[in-house]
Each structure stands twice: as C-alpha cells, then as structure tokens.
Length: 81
Image (cartoon, rainbow, N blue to C red; front, side, top):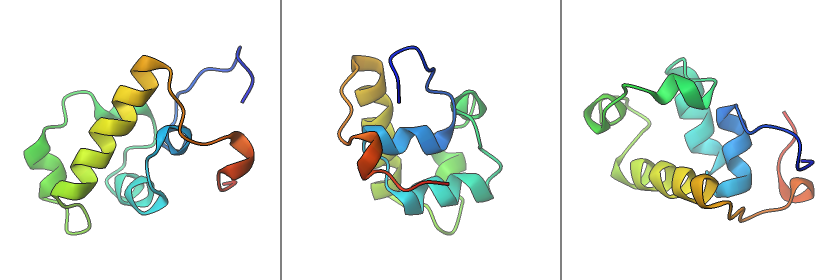
C-alpha cells in the first residue's frame, strides 16, 4: 500500500496484524470499514458466535498498530480480496 493511500477497510487491518478469520467475522457483523467499529462495544463483539476474547484482543492490537504506524506485514504478505 502506498504512503498516500488511506487505511479504511477492516481488511486493511491485515497489514497491522488482524487475522483473516477475525476480518471475516467482522464482515459477517456488517463491519466493512474501520469507521463501522465506532460505538461497538466489547460485549457486542463477544455476542458474535465466531468472536472470542482472543479475537477482541487481536482487533485492539491491530488498531493500536495502525494508530502507531507499525504494520506487521507487507502488502505482498497479505491475502488479496
């Protein structure tokens, strides 16, 4: 992803360490964009059958990595959607 591109989708968080299974679970919840997470609580996430506390921690870590500008993968290492 070029420096001038904006990280906007949940799938973009793969660059920051969010596993594909968590991305897919969030997609099933209707969260396609990072902005869609606004107002969603930990309880909301945990009420989903495919999201456990580990997935919540992975999401938080990926968002922190995004905030801090620390990708954990290169674009070439990510799955293409």
